Length: 214
Image (cartoon, one colour):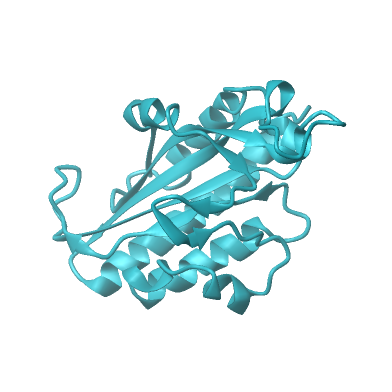
């Protein structure tokens, strides 16, 4: 399937760094960080207000991925997810009539592996290559990725003030993955979205086996 590094989104993200864990979203105080590690599926669903915007198939595919990514024995975790309602497709990349978009972040649970800044470029490139190889010729969805600067609170120097922002060795990135899925019906677009997330999971598993953690 198609996957690429989105330079425009990467440039934009460099001006929008945040902490992990983050607290409340300034633009919408109802949005706040929830730690999904080990959280039951039903509870994960209750924390995601965007979850139903793409229909039932997309809802369940999103939950499948988020529960897996934050489960025991997996080297990753997530700290952001979004989905927009299905709308008419205006993208030239697909002739299908409808489009579903969304995003998810992924980073290593061993927080030091996400630092210093831009280190995750290497892992992102390995992941992109795996995505391109896993479903050749299929064009009903694509992933665009970029780095998103984060300050990891847990990596602050011992003795730092609780109110001091993360700096130095505590600064790094997460990978933000944006999905576009296309179809001529809600069921078709849901299946494309699900297939893309299944490809992402398989690619992450393969990429992790090829990438050397610090």
